[in-house]
Length: 300
Image (cartoon, rainbow, N blue to C red; front, side, top):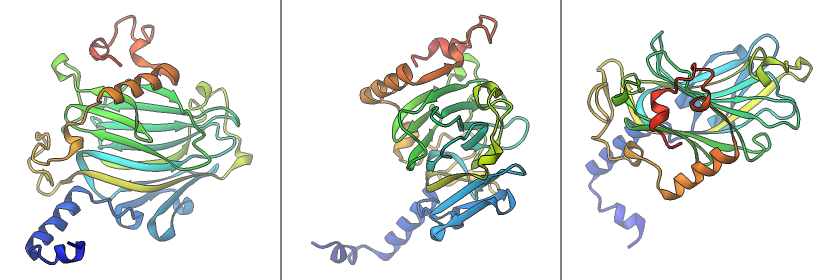
């Protein structure tokens, strides 16, 4: 039976409901920045191109630029393809992250710290809950992120947060509320992206400054996709059902309970053994020899 003949036998109401469900669970599947994002700062330094499929951010000595998603989310999978600044990108920070607002905000970060020509980018990850972060892990990439687009993903559910690069896990941050460690699960967050100058700390601790003769610096974004629970502030509910206390269990989506299988754990171990450059869990001097409680329970 052909697809067209089969689809003609499906009740019209079922099709309408299916379309509605897809819309609610994946508002950015259309991959169109005009529909899914709002440029929030930078004046004319942010440009949506190719009919909404591509968004570029630029940075000069006056200002950087940024955008945010139109929707808020409470759990989901978030994918973005980036092509980072080529050449001498020292002092610059390109970001893709989730965040709520306010002093007690939650946040899940991908930050890409530029470097001098020929030196690798540093991928800086962090997790904030109730305004507290200090959970950094940093990595070098095993490819040149400036010559082509690569996919960076955040999986966020009530049990864990998984950071992926080209679908390879580089970090897992587990929920350790049982140990008294706050975990971001009660605040809806938007997706944000930005390009800005941070030469006071970004490259080699601020020792290498931005070379403004190379400006403007440009980073490119495309294929912004979400498979997530959309949050409605008006009704205090998500498209997956329930209020802020829900773990979205009503939505049968893989990401809701996703964890690493044996292959994923092996890949994670490979990345962390070969490419990790900083792990807060092993920085005993920073925490006065007192290891954070979640580090004692985590294998990675």
